[in-house]
Amino acid sequence: MSAVDLAAVIVTVVCLATVAVLTVAVISLVRTMRELRDVVDDLRDSALPMVDDLHATVTKADAELHRVDRVIGRAERIAVTVDHASRLTHRAFAPPLIKGLSLVSGAGHAGRRLRDRRRNRRSLDLAASGSSTKAVESVAAARPAAPGRERRATPRPRSRRRRR
Image (cartoon, rainbow, N blue to C red; front, side):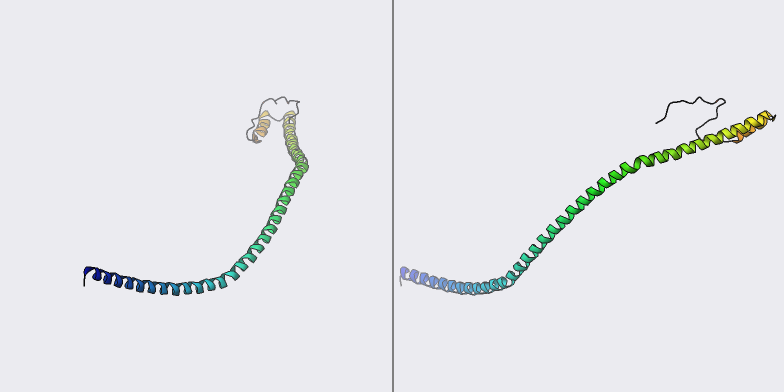
């Protein structure tokens, strides 16, 4: 046998081995493709109903979203209406309420002034009836001054300007 014959036999054996390996690989590939086809069929059978359910759910969610959008729109309109009503109520009730509070405050000031005048008259009556000056001073000293106000010997002249 010559070297060429030996090379031809080796190439033939290697080609037969390669064909055998490729045949086994193709058979394995065909088996895998059949299994893959079965898996795809199972997946299609289970996925299509899920897609239909998903479509129905998305449709319901869209309808609910529109409904919620309408509710939010109504709530915003109600909030604006309440805000306007609150402003109108404030405009309607604030001036009379302020006037009422100022009337009560003024009445309190007037009451205090009347009490002070009565006390001053009593002191003057005691002094005029012949009581000693010590009795008048003791009455004036017994009466505590309001916080932040000191008693003056002579009253301060009142301004005729109206306070605002």
